[in-house]
Length: 548
Image 1 (cartoon, helix red, strand yellow):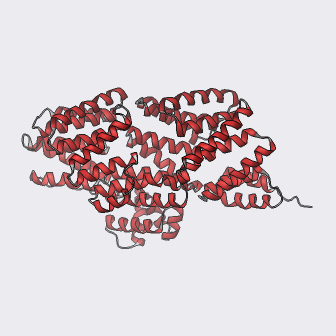
Image 2: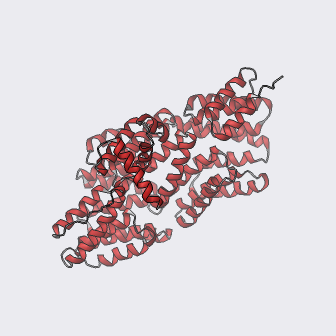
Image 3: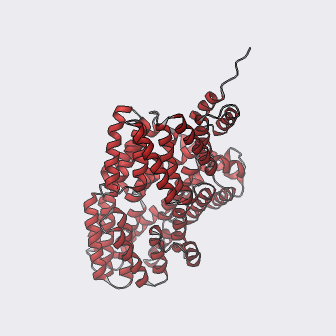
């Protein structure tokens, strides 16, 4: 007689492999004969990965109730703390979050010391604690993990400790912890898939807060691969939001719009409460594109939202309403403080607003604040931004000492020599030398143009080209067509070569068919090719060249 496999055991195997469809089928089968809280809990996790968030919550609520009735208070408390945060992610429901945290606290107090206590502490602190309080909690949690040896909890605590350090201006310390957590998460040390997905999100948040676009780009690629492998819509949406920010910074605006639009769609299908962050970034992009009316429509009704203040200020700045842009930035700085790393983007935009208003003296005062903040962080990137702002002020007043500021910025960016920030510094140097040293100005402008072209920063490249033409210099052109392809296009190209349809490519990369169609069109345009078959041959030739 053949033994019939236990559906719960089969589901566990599928869960560890990330085979959500198989796990779902086995768990639904198990629940037909056994209303066990374990089955409801696992099914809730599976549905979460499948982006069926409402159904996932219902299953985990049933699991919470079942564990509580059984007397397993530790597991009931852990689920309650998880559900607390999900209330904000799904519907921005603060009251429901507080209620679930209260249930978790009550249950964990009865359960005594256990690893689940660390999870409850960390989940609560991640939502409600100040950066200093969050760091204190992470140290408590790390101490707990020494007794209970929960590698997933330990690694997530390290990531949150890194984020807390960055938020307190200890950027180098924080990013070192972030990198350590990422290595632990991705090197097969036994960290759970749920924890890995969150560690990626914490990492991208820390990189974005620190302004470290290079590190964000590195880890964003790793996170995207993970999200594609395990079909994690939550992480995929978060990655697309972060990647959209990177694309905005590098001037790849159409691709940024595609990524942010996809992120908003994914959040709409799942964690609706988080879609506003992608929405605000899209609005900010529309301002950069000159699509001011569209940006205003996206921002309408969010005047009281802290994350919307920069796009609002940039919108008014673009319309020439410098006084209103300044008022919004000053209010944001007053409420959020002027000495934290989060205030750096506000200070930098305020400097631009003041310079456009002809208020160089006030701009200098703000630049001094930015420089002081940069010095407390010991971050070369922020120090370089401070040097750039100081140089821009001096250039506007005709002070050639701006050259020294720009050179200082480049010296700090030796590890980021090909970054957009370094390229912008080179362009500022070219502007400064335009009248006094036209030959030197042309050399700097060509260097800036080469970086902009490599990055795909089309708008900045156009600006550098105009300056070169003003100097009577013909811009250099890169003969390497493949360098014009951006990251996502380089992912689409080999799939074209493999003969996949647009629908198959969309499924493989977890993006929309419309986005694939855009990327295919861009590939053909940038390479001068006429068909998918020619693009496939081009991809094979690139692969052959790369193997030599």
